[in-house]
Amino acid sequence: MALIDFANPSRFLRLANATIPWLSGVCVLAFAFGIDQAMVAPDDYQQGATVKIMFLHVPSAWLGMLGWGVMTVAALGTLVWRHPLADVTAKAAAPIGAAFTLLCLVTGSLWGRPEWGTYWVWDARLTSELILLLLYLGVIALWHTVDDPSRAARAAAILTLVGAIDLPIIKFSVDWWNTLHQGASVFRLGGSTIYSTILIPLLVMTGAFTLLFATLLLAAMRNEILRRRVRTLHLLQASAAS
Amino acid sequence: METTAHINFIAASYCAAAIIIGVLIAWVTLDYRAQRRTLAELELQGLTRGAGSARSAPTTDPATEAAKEQA
Image 1 (cartoon, each protein chain N blue to C red):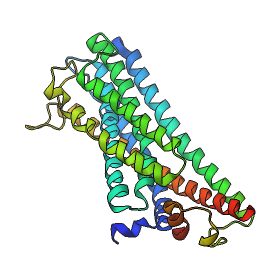
Image 2 (cartoon, each protein chain N blue to C red; image 1 turned 135 degrees about the vertical axis):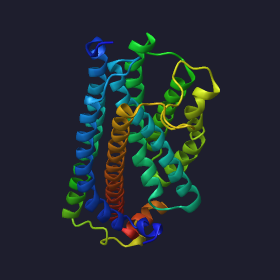
Image 3 (cartoon, rainbow over the protein chains, first blue to last red; image 1 turned 180 degrees about the vertical axis):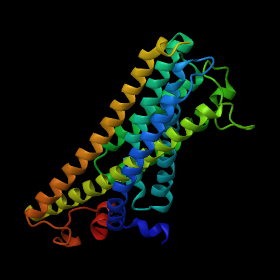
Image 4 (cartoon, chains in turn blue, green; image 1 turned 90 degrees about the vertical axis):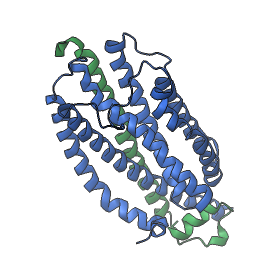
């Protein structure tokens, strides 16, 4: 089955209806396993028990960026290929990505207070992450401001492509500038600097969070397709009444 | 460093995660129910996606047209 076959919303709905219950079940199991692993993971020799915040902070940071990445691909789908599900994907991904970015900032602040002595500092990594949250809020506002979905999709797609510049800035901010935030420690040349007893729970939690993201995205896309059907029927109703 | 030294920060982080993820799940679930309910009400009124011809829709919105044809 080619990718274009999923362009049919009815086919996508059937696929989503069949997939979401299974994904939800696997997601619950993954979280149960991940939280168990996180709770029994040893304390860090420097940070102590606060390292347990990492099991939430790192996955939510990853998903905040993944969300914008998904929206960027969808924006290309809207502007270049005019794929019927591209703007549905972009609109559905925005609130989910925003929520994970917010969670990243909140957990980061709560981790920063005991480790750095402050909840917030205008450091390059923190600031670029905050900019990502503001970009998400801007895209969400744009979707709600423009009444015509296809026009809103094009405007949101342009803003998304411009905002994608923030992704490499977030990733490499700790290399380009002297930041309070630590450098890369999981995905880096030369391998991870985290010991396996902490790295494995982190990877399990990242997998669980990613499954949750996929489940929520599918469900939100299904809702958006239904919302467009409701809109179509309302237009038909208005047409019949006039 | 003792586990209990910063337990408030750890607990607050996990509570924040539970709240934000809970709100996301609730939003998606309630929105789904609302859209299904609205669709059912419209169909009870005799409006179905096949009921109106493409000519009768007062729009030139290609997304709406595409959604209508493909629905």
